[in-house]
Image (cartoon, rainbow, N blue to C red; front, side, top):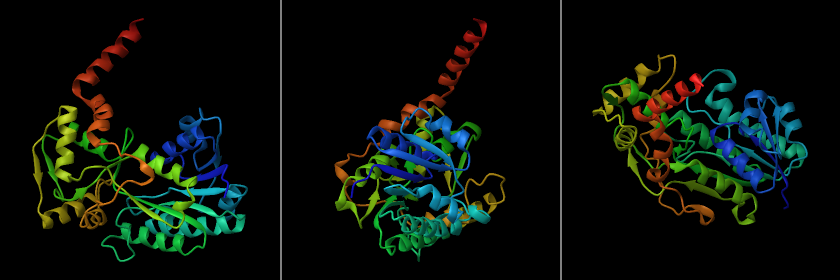
Amino acid sequence: MEINEVCVIGGSGFVGRHICHLLAAEGYRVRVATRDRERAKEQLILLPTVDVENVDVHDPAQLSAFARGADAVINLVGVLHDGRGDKSLQAVHVELARKAVAACRECGIERLLHMSALNADRNGPSRYLRTKGEAESIVRASGLAVTLFRPSVIFGREDTFLNLFARLLRLAPVVVLACPDARFQPVFVEDVAAAFVKSLADPESIGKSYDLCGPRVYRLRELVEFVGATTGRRRPVIGLNDTLSYWQAFAMEWLPVKLMTRDNYYSMKVDSVCNCEFPFGIAPAALEAVAPGYLAQQTPRSRYQRMRGRAGRDRD
């Protein structure tokens, strides 16, 4: 199965941008579907073999037209919090997976790579994990040449995980932390991207599902403390018990920006860790080797130096 042209659904997102860069570097032609073409172009414009198209991927006709002529489809779209309409977990995870399969069949595309999540399970404790599990079932039953990827939490320069803690530590004198003993095995975004791209050229990956984890397991409390030490903003961390963790999640659901929900609380009931080797011979990067490179830019000293630099340029 020769693959030259790849359609990426969710290619302008955090993981998608890394995958598109790597696909382009490997010589693939890439088409990216987005609702905001101008914003996506700013992120991907320097890649000569990448085309960005305005597509409503929830519209089956538009999705099929976008995919037509490609050799493979990569579906990366996902949301952490439940929303309304086409932003709900059901629409994004389940219905979009079904539409991606239908588009592949209609266009005669055999190869489909699908982003799932560690612990995805139709009977899982949270709606997030249940919808991810249902999507896996749809993709596996499609009859296509499928590969699934199930990462733990993903970190990298533009992540919404460690950077969220960094912003929180900048504002809060004390961190009151729900589920402090929840366990994660963070995986570097570039390692996730490499796994996707290597699987395209590896027929042995067809029909398989890969759990993607970094080299070390952390409790949530340890991750917050690591970010505090790296950014120079060490804060006392007060871990909540299970009951108070639930009620904190409930209260946070009412905030304009959802930092945590009860569904997140239920997801953290299951450790996001795996006991397997990273696929395709990739040696996963350690959090401590990568994260300080971007978190250190948020230290008080680095921010002061950037302000001085800008002030100097303004005087020139």
